[in-house]
Each structure stands twice: as structure tokens, then as C-alpha cells.
Amino acid sequence: MQLEENVQAAFNGLREHKFRSFLTMLGIIFGVASVIAMLSIGEGAKREAIKKYQQLGVNNIIIRDMDLSDKELESVRAKFSPGLSLKDAQAIKDIVPQIVDLAPQAEKKADVKYQDKSIKATLIGVTPSYSEILNYTTESGSFVNKDHQNRQLKVCVIGTDIASKFFTVDDPIGQSIKVDDQWLEVIGVLNSKSLFTETVGELASRDLNSDIYIPLSTFHKRFEKEKLLSSELKQITIKLEGSENISQISNIVENLINRHHFNNKDFSIVIPIELLKQEEKERRIYNILLGSIAAISLLVGGIGIMNIMLATVMERTREIGVRRAIGAKKDDILSQFITESLVLSITGGVIGVILGLTLSITISLSTAITTSVTLYSVLIAFLFSVLVGVTFGYLPARKAARLSPIESIRYE
Image (cartoon, rainbow, N blue to C red):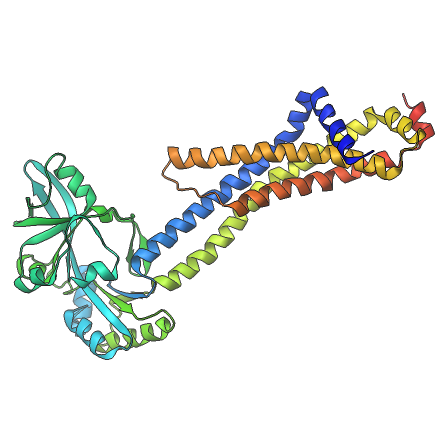
């Protein structure tokens, strides 16, 4: 039989046994849909992670003051460590090679009020270089500049969440908010940022859209430390010319700060590009695991195809005998039944792709999970369904091709 006739016969079989064919394809449909949905979730998570690390800067080194208890703080101060400070920042700038710029910052929790509304927020003292190094942009207004820093002005830039809670109608620019016991003028509103920060070498979640940024000079002049022995700075972010020697430069920075802190381990160093590489490695393993779990459904679907094709061979034994008797070769019978299993798997694969795309979009729209469907995930799922059809359809097809014409015609 010609290929066209084989395909036509296969579709006729599907139409004659619609419900049975649909049940047979269910394993393929759910398998393909699961692979696409799982991989889209993994890809979405990967892109979100990359986006977050890029916000930290792939050419950056982040030095973070450790969160220590009162007892631990007393211990390191007794051992002559001053904690992370502006002197550390200046020494790094003067000594460490390939530095483009650096951004020191100080932090504290604060009570923020506007009219009859109040919230808790993180107050961050920064220098003008902070926005460029950490890719911060304003939705409206401007960021802290050199004049604000030099004159120790009482100005602030607020996150989008604070702007939406306090200023539902009014334009926030030019308004005054009370932070602890200080009144600050709003000069800018930041664009929305991902829920992400880095603390003590580990990733943690924090709503960056509820932060308030003020000049570092104003922070040190107007606001008290959260703890008496707290460090002058909470973080120093270093921007390098490139990422080629970032590990070696990180070692230089670590040795320098160790000398300044008399070898007290009261700080951590994080390199975003190395975290990104580790994240990508773990994400690949995660995607393979998710895809493998989903592929089990495809294998189950393949077993279903093999079972139904074996039953079909039994049902059509006389038909096979007649065709062999009037001249059909073994290869004709073999190709006929392989074509039928392929039609089942391809049809199931197409339906599964549509279902998988629908699932991915639905998950993204109805939950906080970000999904991203890629062409390779669709192709992998679909081609695997075709492979399953050929593999599991071959055994029944071979059995049909080997039937004796005389015995097949006699078969009841």
C-alpha cells in the first residue's frame, strides 16, 4: 500500500473507533502537555533568576555586613573590628584594581507616616553611584544626586508600593513623609523591582518596592543606629570593568577587609555572576528532572498504543490474510500498522501541545508562577511522542507482518 493509503486507512480506523482511539491517545496527550508545562515553569524560573542576578550586576562584587546578635557584636568589637565602614570602602577604591566605582549603603528599619497612614519600611542611605551600579531607575522624579549628598539634604526616593499606599490620588513628588522623627521630601519614585536581595551569602526575599532611599550623609547625620554597636555600613557594592578576573579581585577584597577587621569574620562576599552560573547549573538539573517525570506519562501512553495496536492486529487478522493473499508484502503490512500507531501518537502529540500551551498560559495568569514556553520544549515533547509511537507500534506491526496468509484467512 502507498503511504497516502496507509494514512487514510489509519484515519478511517480513528473515526470508526473514536472513543477507543481517544482513550489510547490520553497518555500521549497528558504526557506531551506535562512536559511542555513542566519545562515552561522551569524556563520561567530560570529567566526570573537571571533577571534578578542582572539587577545585582554581573560585574559586581557585593560585601555585606553580617547580621549579628548583641553578644556576637560585643565579641567582634572587643576583638577590634569596627565593622563595615566608609574607611573600608575608601581603602577598596584606592587599592583594589579594575574598579569602575563602588556604592556604600547603610540600612535600618523605620516607621513611615503620611497623613493618617503608616507602614514599616527599610530606610537605606546611599550615594549617587548606587542607582547606576545596581541598575535602579525612577518611574517619576529623580534619584539621589551629588548635591543632595554634599548638602545632607532631607530628601528621599520611595518604592512603588509606598507610593501606591500613601499617594492614591496625589502626585508623590514634592510631598513630605515622616520617617521615624524626621520629615523627608519625596523627590522620586522607583520603578518596580523584583522581590529579591542578598544577605550573608544567601538569597532571601524582601520587598524592594517598600524601601526608602536617602543620601548616605543624611542617614548618618539624622538617624540613629538600630543597635549601639552596629556597623557604619550594611553593604558595599563594587562595580568592576569586566567579569574575567572577578574571583581573583574578590580574594583581594576579602584579604583587605580581613586586615581592617583583624580577621573577624563579620562580613560576607557575594559574587552575583558566580551565583548565576550555579543557578543555571541547578536549573538545568531541575528541568531534566521535571521533564523526566513528565515523560513517564508518554511512556505510559506508548504502552497504551502498543496494547491497542495488538488488539487491532487480532481484530483484523482476516483482513491481513486477505491482503497478503492478493499480493501485499510483509513490508506493506508492517508500514500500514506503524503508520496507524504514528497517526495515533502524532494526533495525541498535537492535542498535547495545544493543551500544554494552554496550561502554561493558565498557570502564568492565575498564579504567581512565571512560565516561559520555548520552541525546544515543544519540539522535544512532540518528537518524543512520535518516537513513542514508532517504538511501541513496531512490535504489533511486526507481529501483523509475520502472520501466515492461509492461517489468517481461516482465523475466526
